Length: 186
Image 1 (cartoon, rainbow, N blue to C red):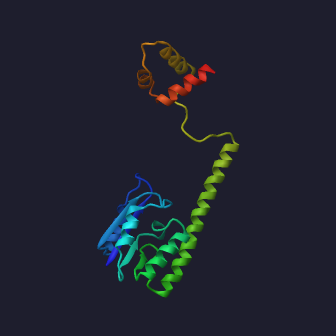
Image 2: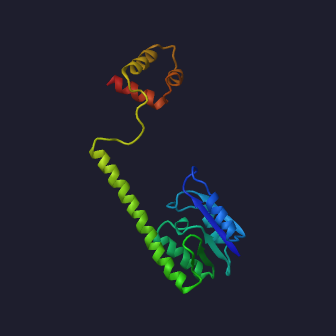
Image 3: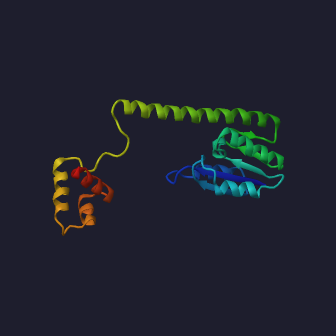
């Protein structure tokens, strides 16, 4: 029996591409997760691994959909192998039920981890370079001009105005309001 597993990291992403590919691969059942691959607890993955029986094959769209790291990938596939369960990827066309597939699995796993590490390094280097140029991350302040700041001060001074009313009127959050009031007091 072919058991499919699909995963996306965020709710903004869609499983459609993976589900279509798994359907085309004649998967009898498909398990899904919408969670980062770095998380330990992935209910869909846990379910497919628990359900798999000797002779079954777990099918994923791409190698990085399964494991958190190269070490985790190898542990999962070795566990499947001990249990008599095969593993197959559609994108890389790996099939661990063959000796060549096992070799390629280990090579692709190392390359996938290498790529993730490069992306992480580039991201961190970009953030460091931006900070060195005086840029901060995050959203620009909503209240930026003096007139708006004066308006907050005036509205807050009138005791009949509630914090909720002021925030709704100016389109700011309560935390932004209180942060501004605190900054004005000091």
